[in-house]
Each structure stands twice: as C-alpha cells, then as structure tokens.
Image (cartoon, rainbow, N blue to C red):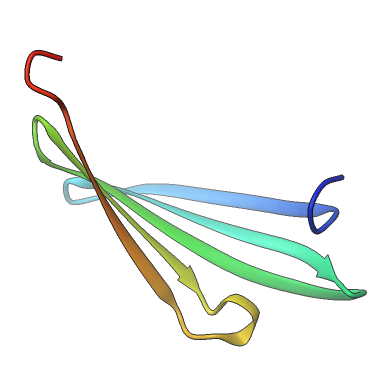
Length: 78
C-alpha cells in the first residue's frame, strides 16, 4: 500500500480510426470516502517518426477536466 492506499484500476482499450484509446477508471478511498476518477489516453502516430500522446484527466476531485499533449520524435538514425 503506497500513496493514497488501496486503489482499484480498471482499463478499457479500443482502436478508433488511427488511434489507440485507453480509458482507465481509478477507485480509491480518501479520508474514508470512496472516490473515482477517470483518465483517457489517446496514442496516435502522426508519422512513422512521431508519436502523439494526449492524456485527459476527467474531473479529478470534482475539478474541471485537464488535458496534456506530448509529442515524441524518433531521432534521425535511431
């Protein structure tokens, strides 16, 4: 048990167009109360050398959704 204690995670994955979408539901106990949050990850290839990863956290602790976008590029010759 680390961090916030016992946590149950359930993930579902699906292909949508040219992207892989992974939806993960987190169920945890905070100060004796059950909480649930969801994280949506979308992985797509922009080109054969560029991977795009978008992560959306849906309403963590009642807040608005937040999205981050990361771009990974393969180095020339790698």
